[in-house]
Length: 188
Image (cartoon, rainbow, N blue to C red; front, top):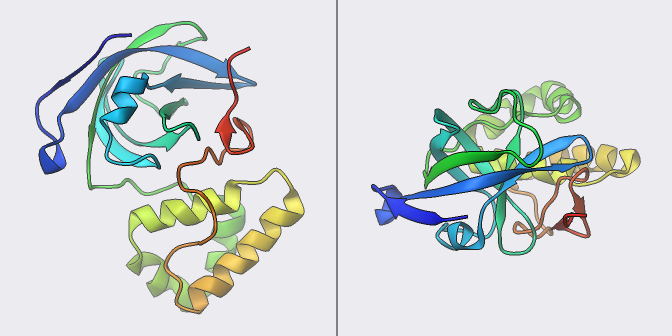
């Protein structure tokens, strides 16, 4: 997979271009960035990017794979993803940006925040990046009881002035459907 750079991003970052292969893990599709592309990114954790995917413009947050690399989650919401299947190749162009898109807040955390109107200003005052971290931390478990407890702890920590969750590796893969022990599941 060739990787190249062109243009300019923030802090002199240039667009990172590569051809990615679609990979399936369970029911989910992802595109892993080549090592050289991930090394050009400003963080081993999540990175907000804008660019093109299959020739269509998009904004997203690249997810860490827990091995110092990154991947793009392929979903119906990703422009250019229509009709893609495992083993397909797609042209990708990403440029890191400081403009983080809003995360999709899961129903359980959203309901807890709605039941805590005293936190409305706090939640809107923290950065989108911090909101992504709360969402990742809550979702980083398969155990329903642990997830419920994390929602409760999130509300408590926010009430006590914490702007970010603590005690988890930001460079680990936190999607329980795609990871084992904080690392993206290897190809079969």
